Length: 193
Image (cartoon, rainbow, N blue to C red; front, top):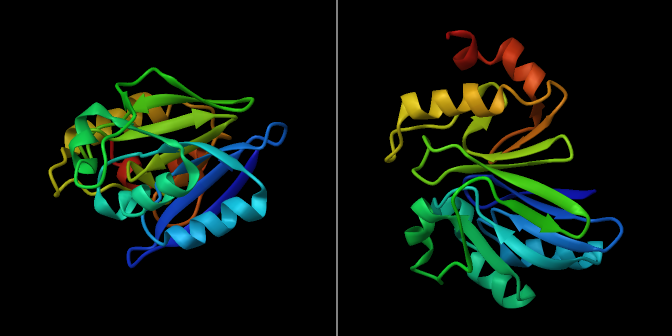
């Protein structure tokens, strides 16, 4: 699996470009800003982007969707509960409800619904890798004061993410990567329960 991480925009939002080594097909996760930087990275990796996956509809994760879509011709996937957030720029091509598999070349990522930070929050899991948007961070959790729900967020983290293998690499929407094991051991929000 090819993987590039870009920290973009005034909020330092992580955008991930994931590609299949064999087919060179790729996906962009959360193109929040700076479409030019995203497109340069795609071109440098020689990838053909088939999909733009949005972990949730907040502007810092969707700001460059329209430009990246126009340049790549990729389809856009977002959870149905957050789809209205994209209407200001474009309609989504694929509405997700959880349980789907997003296929990029020989790679497959299952869609895990994790509302709490936003109503339509999702994570993508495959190849012992979790792209979790603003659900879980290295040493923290997503905020819930912007239309979220703290109890729902915590329930989803414990029942859907903490059950993944301990060596799962976790790539959040902001900040450095971590592992499920590290979060179980040291995340203060998860140790309180």
